[in-house]
Structures are given as structure tokens and as C-alpha cells.
Length: 233
Image: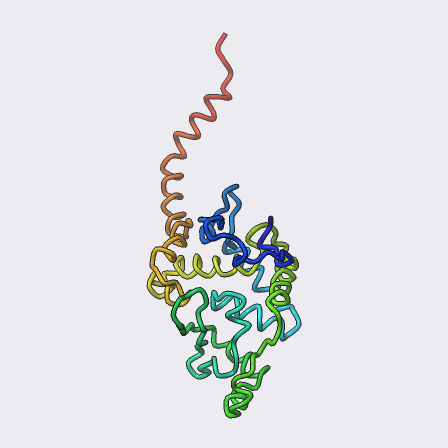
């Protein structure tokens, strides 16, 4: 399956806990399929999101730049935003106790959210401040992301909201963000959950690999040519 099927009517609550996959948070499925967007795929996804209808684009971009779960973004209201600090306050799901995390977002995205949703005015109205920005079902939000992935020509297990969340975790660590900050931004209760994102080959690791390849080029070159050299009679 390319991603979790939103059309599936079986809920996690109806399935015995012991039957749920133990590797649901890992970056690869048991068949070896990658479940996160790599750097180039994420860039293509962001570009395709910007081309969507404005309301959908802002939803998709907020999801991508916060690393949040789809239901967490759908729950956002005007009071969730610290505009001047370009920060979003997200109520964390899948935690036993109530927990809110603050996640910084690009200033340009915050400016677009302020403009489109009139956030300054909405925050001054006690009623509007609590209304959801995207009052829709998570299935609708899921379809927005799938449409963006289709436009970006991204397929497979990673082409879904969870693939974006995994890409956020991988991308922050590869950019040098400390593990504890990525953990906080993603709302993980344990550092070990966040640490899985450090397993992906990043720019520094590839640079070391390139040094090894260059150091071995002479040997590899000799072997290839020896294999194709004419044999003496």
C-alpha cells in the first residue's frame, strides 16, 4: 500500500493493540519501501503545494513546515499563532497528558497566513480566535496532500502526510538542528523516537563517502580495465 488508506473503515481502536505493527514509526516498511520524502522530493512537494488553491496551499505548507500530524494542523485556530515570533502552538496528539509545543515557521509563511486569515483581527475577537482555520475532515486534508504529491510526481509509501512528517524529522537533523529541538518540535515523548531520523544518510555522511570513493578510484579503475584487457595467447 502506498500509504495509510483513509477509505479504510477499520479504526485502530477496533484492532487489538498487539496486532498493530511494531515498526509504524520507522523510516522503512518491512518490504524495504522508504516512508519519508528525501530532499529533492520534499522540494518538489513544497513547489506543488504553492501551486494549489490558496487555502489548500496554506494548509499543506503549514503541515510541511511544522512536521505536525494532519489532525493537529486541522485543529489550529487564530489563537494558535504567535504572529510576531512566527511560531505556531500545536496541541500534541498521542500523549497521555495535555501537551502544547511551539514550532517556528518561515516568516513568509506566517505573513501569508496572517493575510489570508486576517489573523490580527481574528485574535482580537474572542469568538473568532477559537474557530478552526480549516474546518474540514481529516480525509479532506489527506486528499489535499495526495493531490500535491501527484502534482509533484511522487508516489509510493512516502506520498502522504506521514511522509511529510518523516521528511521534517530527517530534514531538521540533516540541517544541524539539535536532536532535542527536533524532538520538541515533533512532540515526541522520548528522544529514542526522534533518533530514528538520524539513520538517514545526510550531506556530511555523503561527503565522507565521496572521499572514500575518490581514494579507491585508482583500484577500481585498475580492476575494470584488467577485466577488459585482451588475454595473451
